[in-house]
Image 1 (tube, rainbow, N blue to C red):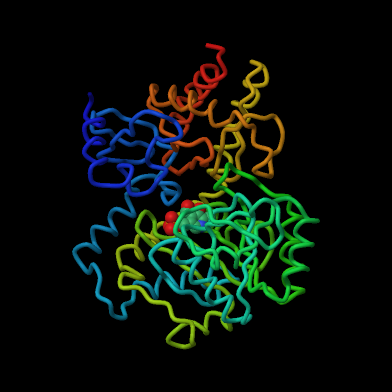
Image 2 (image 1 turned 60 degrees about the vertical axis):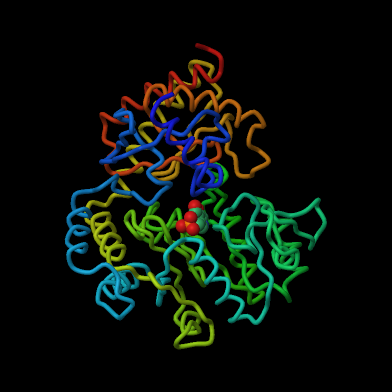
Length: 429
Ligand SMILES: Cc1ncc(COP(=O)(O)O)c(C=O)c1O
């Protein structure tokens, strides 16, 4: 038994499944999770003192890599200045002013401590604005563990929904309507039938929680236009894509102004920060200026505020979005060309600094199109990656994240490991 296995046995006694967030367990890939004790740049170091190249990057917050020097310096400074006060302070003001002056569709915002909180609060605002209760979401889009959004459509019966999780009241699940991605006809039918009850349509404008299911631009535009025509609010959940694909996220990329937007991950530079924002008239409904109650003991935590601000300023200064997109396109074109030549089915799909390995040589825009054997193939792919000390999320349906710290040398090494792991997973090695 190695050290990680010993730790995991102890964890199983004190935490459900041994973990504090489900995907950290290796349930879908098998084996025991490796325990990591430190991190720097593109690397994680395990308790066994083995160094792994890390493309999980804490599931997205670390756009600059682990412990970027500028962010680390500001965090040290903040640790010896102020931790939390529950009072007014200037740090959240600085981050709020920076965001509202750089992202035109965020006129006002409220900081919270996670993406889930941001989404939950944005739904409350949408319901208050419209005085309606129902929400339309898309199949395969994840919006955190908000009760009403842990829901998928049940057995094709319009208006009837069932929860993805135990413990969600049927009445809550029934408030959510689920629509397939990339299906304009289904969307038009659902939105028309439910227009009098729908407060909001919420979507990940770049769905990245069930693989990387980039949508056709026309589809997203239709979704937004048809909602607006019916006075239904459009909420862009940019918890992953916000500040990662562009400074203005997918809203900037698509040239669409959502009514409300939610952020998490990158906005806190590796610390627990979430945020929701949008049109001033809507955000002014939030307490204490309006009747929508929402609060948080650790909201706008000063360390998170300054880690986030330093991260965002550096991203802008170096134009990180261009650098990472180029690096990843270079990597994926080398990998995909090689895969075709070798008769390997696995392909690397990228968008900006996000990537996903999947098992088909075609664009995939819906959950249904993902190859049925993908989970099993990924299991072997992952096993070989771990042997070669390259860490991706322990699930074939999670995307991988590139950061500034993944330089040419790291990427070249990773490329050869990806190739070897693909051959192994497809029984060619
Ligand atoms: C698009 C999206 N929304 C919301 C969330 C929830 O964020 P958090 O895990 O910070 O609560 C996530 C988390 O992965 C996400 O990807």
